[in-house]
Image 1 (cartoon, rainbow, N blue to C red):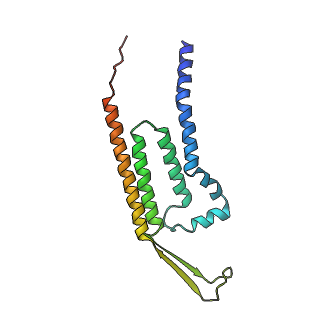
Image 2 (image 1 turned 135 degrees about the vertical axis):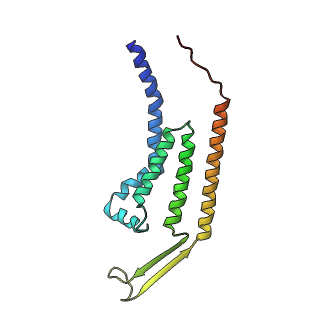
Image 3 (image 1 turned 90 degrees about the horizontal axis):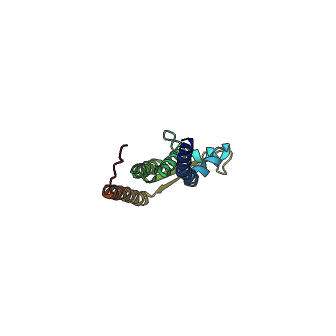
Length: 169
């Protein structure tokens, strides 16, 4: 009897271990490598300056995407994978809109001892790329529709599979 339990543990390990390794690899590919240099004080601080002060930090956004990717890979073969993919797309749409301030980015450079500007001078750069942002958001909506259609296809294939009821002894 102990051999049968040990065999089932090996079977479970052979099912779970590849999923965990694949999830860890994809989590690292999707942004885990960004978390390493962000821990450096100079590098992380410079990237954080591009984000609005009231919104999430860049590190938190990367962490959200890594966690979602790991969950998607772990739940491969279930309907939850498609729901998480749609959630990831919606989060990226909202983050892109908030970070770019609706498609208009303004950078103001004031005279400081580090800049070569004369005292009292400021330079303002404003870039309006709202049309490009709109195209990115349309592609994101297409991604949501694609995931929704894949979820419907997954459910229809599962509904067509025969169900076998186990016999009780």
